[in-house]
Length: 98
Length: 251
Image 1 (cartoon, each protein chain N blue to C red):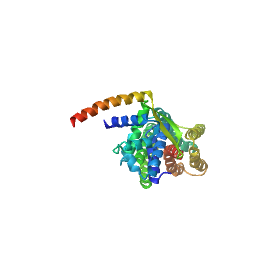
Image 2: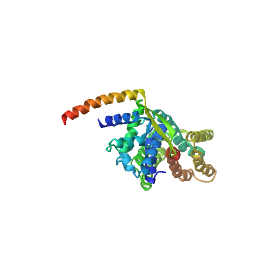
Image 3: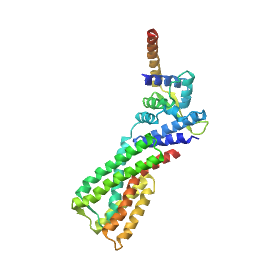
Image 4: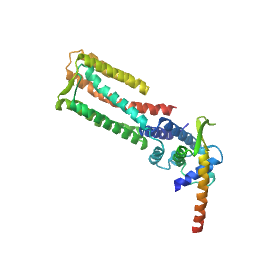
């Protein structure tokens, strides 16, 4: 389940605008996701790309080497909407339980 | 610029992924992405453990599991590998004018090549995944060399004791075999984009060519060159992989 949640988080972060790996981690930390170990996003990103949820493009970064930027595909946007729905259901159930 | 520790991690990850049969392009992509991440993280005073979550080994595995295995590429390189090793073993006798083969060598050779390949893949994968130090890598490489050398010698020399030759080449056939081996080496050089596979046979079989024309017994020539031949042959097995890893790390 945690893996699925991380995927949902990444979909939501990427939806806010084109971004790259390190920036995603920074954003997640800003939102309070300190429990996510930095590297763990990459296997998930690889899978998301394979599933066609994200599109990537290589661009020159200000620091020099090329950097991989991610955006959501149509399928990714749909997946995010489904995730949100499931999450709201789950969180309201959790809230009732606690 | 990455710290030495991070560079080492990226290098090991690349070695591990390539020896796991992952596609070059995907390996290049993910290692470039992680290098970028590590560079950003180091600028902010973080270190590699925050990226791998404490276990580089488990982390590398999680990356490996998500990348596609390039079975087609593996299938393509297997015959090339086979022909290369075969050429190394038969060029010597052919150059000395004494090529023959018996049933033990004929059946044992492919098995030993496959065992050798398996040992090297397991060794290189572990070296990458478990972050071997140079010393440890050297010791393990030596152990692998030793085991394989023993196997090859057992098949090639033991075969001679156990079974009579089923084919013995005449002078013309020996020259043809030697020429075919030379072609194989050139082909290997083109395929692996390195001069290594041409230079080493020259060093190895050049002296044999000369020695065969001197007053030496067949056995002296055989034992003299066998040790060097085997070591070089094993080096040839891992050389293309290491070159590939090196090239990518330079990029």
